[in-house]
Image (tube, rainbow, N blue to C red; front, top):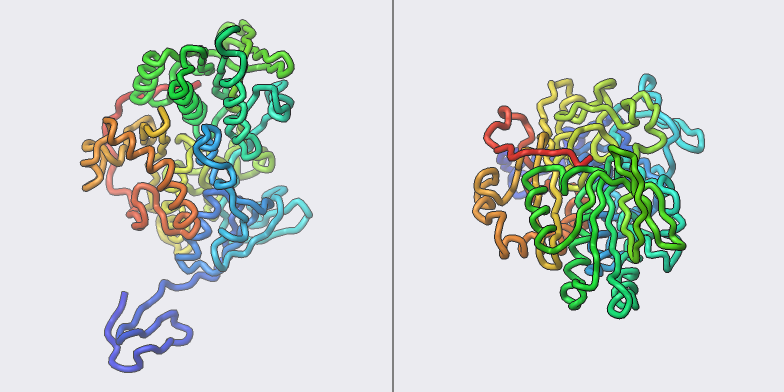
Length: 475
């Protein structure tokens, strides 16, 4: 907003937030003195903090105990030998949005009726508005033998779901693929598992599988390896449209699938994994040379039993507005919420602008009209250099950015199927997304499928134009 001013071409109008430059009066949004506290300094917390600061929210506090910030989507590529794990981490102080107050502590409990948070050292932090972006806890100790196996160099047990273990995946793969398990003895057994609990980036167990399977092909060793995908679910993916495609790829490449099978125990010394049929409870032991595990995940301990949370410990929010169903001055986003969307970084990039919009509306006493559609994206790597870009919303509704049916002009003319498209999506996953995350997202200047352009998040009408091509549970 601006208007022409005839004099004083470079004056600052004290106390108004307005600047006169080049004869034009630029009016900045009104600064809000309200105390906004954000719990969690991961993707959601950093993104929202940056967007709020850009909205001239001047009193923003972020509570995060860790001094390192991770770009977790890169860990799959680290496990596949494409990226170095060090590329996924930066000091928190270097990416903290300018002007944000950082409390480097753990949250112990919430007192929402008093608008207070208690930290681990007993301090009380007061707020006017609260944003919870606490993520999800990865529990490697829930499967007997898993933690021990990860900590043992030669156990063959790996996981890309943690910074400390991501690079072990490719190192183990190199050792196994170059060992005596090939040739004279027998085929090497590679097992990839899916978790029985909620899982962030549910496509990751397959991404790493397809990356390493393709690497074996390039090495001329694919016929000397048994690759098996073990899942408690009955399908390859939670959205039928993509599950059918992945199942076709699986069959074409000779990858075996064991459905309705849950990993319940690992003997890392003897390299034996025990699985249990989720229906019959029958157990089976499977020897392995390399075992990739998708671990159990749960709501953070300090959220379980909290006044903010549901029975499972996830923050109870309206799935469209991201506002707490219990306290109007509390909002939440990301993996710590009970919204029924896939838990991905892409989902957070769609939730964040909705949350910021609605938080501002709440502060101004206006009706919340920002609307989150359940959008999530999973760049399903199917080989080195090729990615299937899965995009969907609530109920498995396809929301493909580059599709002629659901995309926006001009991106809709790129298309989604074909070798060129999959190579393009690989470039997005391997190069563009990490770049925009560090350079734009952490500065509040990236809005997912809208790129650097702030999206219109107000609900216009029910999304009935996007086809539902079927959804199925991964459990």
